[in-house]
Image 1 (cartoon, one colour):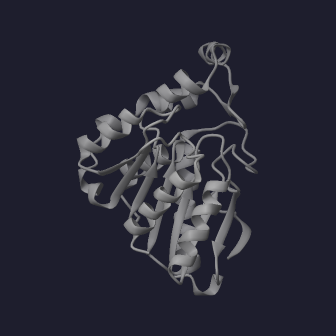
Image 2 (cartoon, one colour):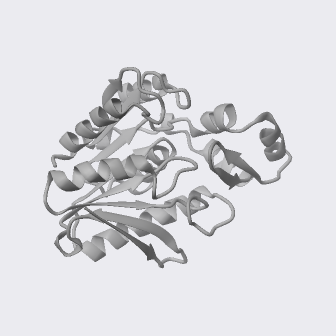
Length: 252
């Protein structure tokens, strides 16, 4: 499997990306991988998934990119509208570069939240969408789990602050207000339900398992609980289960 870095310099963006495939000139379908809050394009989960997906069916590629303010991205403050622009730009680039409309999406945590927001705003450009531990209520996850009391006080005072676990991301009140403005639980996703798969670990310590289960039930979306899996699926066997489910759902 080849792993190649590249940048997309379009729409006022400079998006750092990573391509996994066997032969760049023979790509016929692309899976866009959307990492979580504080993640980056070199994360191990993306590489593990790509190794399986690329080898499963000839002509398959996986593209991972850094969200704004993540990884090698140069932006200073994380904004929801920039995330939307990045995803729009990546989709357009993939479609044009590889000459294909066979595009899939795989999002984890915050990446899953952003994918659902994208569908609600733009419709669904993907053949299938797989979500692992999606942050349905990202606002509560941010303020109730990720941010410390001191960081929340800084935000409440109208100032930007670095938040996160292993890797910090700079956010401000504008980011928090954007999360307040859109509640995914109040938006119907029935039109896309057949093309979405949600998996969630029953031992998730960051994003409540019950949020995904309820969201899937409300929208008649296929939901698979992964018994004992934590938020990051540290157990390789549980990650293998999730990858197998996604590959089967995508029809690779």
